Image (cartoon, rainbow, N blue to C red; front, side, top):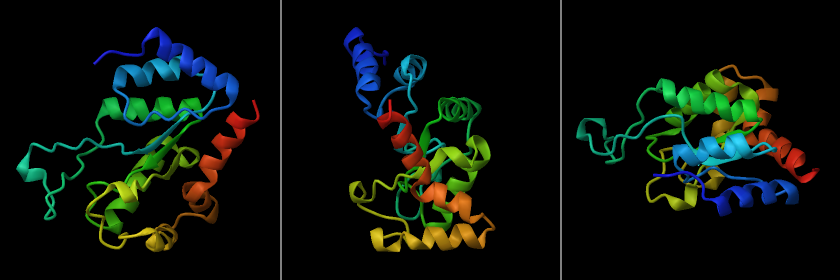
Length: 176
């Protein structure tokens, strides 16, 4: 429930000095805000989403029994905007998505909130027992490309989402 310890704060500073990319995944909100304040480098949120997952509400469960994302709440928009202001990247996780359409819609919402320079893929594919229809394994990732193009996204935006944004962050952090 708390934020970073003194040792954690020192670790972030040292990671910045050594050119280690900081990943905000699995940290609480207090820690996330502290890291964004402390870091001198862009960070990533490697596999997450911009939506809440109300797992206890049976009305929000998909037919697969997974929680369906709700709308982006204002506090979540603040976090996404702060991550974008840092120059970081949100890797859209596929967890709780029913199908390819849901994943692509999640990507589009993140682009709308953060801008195309701050969104990437964060499948956590092999951490899932049930994958979305159309994205059952890594060989199906090109379907995301086709869907983004079909929805009118430019090649530049698609390339950023498919890895270009991560490469930018890695380049900025590693060149320090």
